Length: 225
Ligand code: GRF
Figure 1: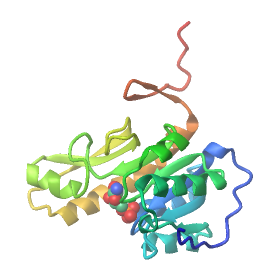
Figure 2 (figure 1 turned 60 degrees about the vertical axis):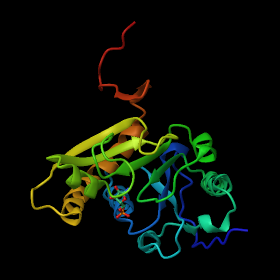
Figure 3 (figure 1 turned 90 degrees about the vertical axis):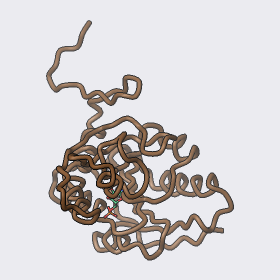
Figure 4 (figure 1 turned 120 degrees about the vertical axis):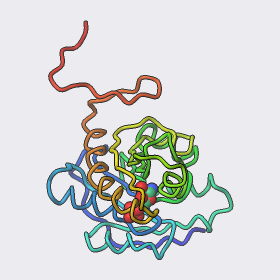
């Protein structure tokens, strides 16, 4: 049985289900904070119904509590298989009426039960211009490769690691004297700007998938008959 610890739920009854976000974290939670701040500023019309961490010590949980958001810790260690862990995540999110899941530094692979529960409704933010440098230590990979430009990608999550349709990207110059930390710091600024924007775009429903392309319909553009 999973150890699940919780604080009281925030009131998220009034919003349509797609605008009820579930944010999954494993650590610091600065991207979670960017979403919290965008909602508080009124630039993102959504509500975070729950923040779930697989690590009880994740600093981001405190950010959520400070914002009055329900938090859960669901540790992958309490489950004998990845699918069971995924099912527990999906169940917790569904119970809270979540319509869109935002991964924000969540350090576990998303498996089929979550993909089935939230088809084309899981977003991830990654600190490189995908498809370059997927996986961990993307900033160190970029420096080691010698690229002059890296950046941030927000994408839909599929079964392929960091490989889903790209929603938004922003470029960040790589300096000759960058370390993974200095580059990460500059990329993070762009992550915090772009992630709420990508969530807004997805919630607007002004997009469609063409193969693996995420295509945005231009406002006011005439429909082809
Ligand atoms: C970010 O760089 C994000 O792109 C990556 O993990 C980091 C999480 O940072 N997936 P934070 O926990 O949001 O501060």
